[in-house]
Image (cartoon, rainbow, N blue to C red; front, side, top):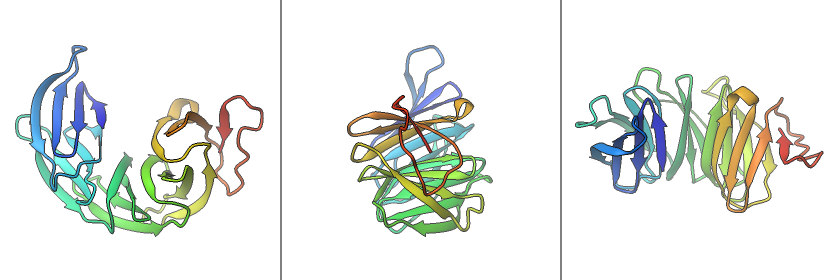
Length: 212
């Protein structure tokens, strides 16, 4: 996967993190480092000098990329199962653990500090998006479960929504317009954010936007 921040693009594959200069409109490689455990699944860059990596069977990983010629692993945390995705907002990281959990971490001090864990019984998590105090957990069966993470030590489920597809592969937020773009294996869905409840009405007026 690829993440872009501050003029640099960060690409992770199974074995490597590659750093590119993207400020000129083309990608020029300027650094590379091995992924710990060689099981890279996803990457997020949204803070200067650091990237967050979903390390598959080797958990949640944090790298210092301040010097692209010498990036290095800061620390990592081994969850109960393979980590498929990570999302960070306001110093709190939410991690999708495919064995059936949402993990939360404090990363505000540029180290990984575990905070909380909650189990889900509506699917196996393979994508996650944190926006403000809500974490959206995408499942392998098309469901999206929402969690209140205002207290990240005790996440609370707010219910789930079943998309028309199967695996929820990725979610991207448009915070200005209160929208979430969801990519599953069959479609790209637009979700309109509201007050999350266990009653999710779906696309009531057939405009392609689902109110959640």
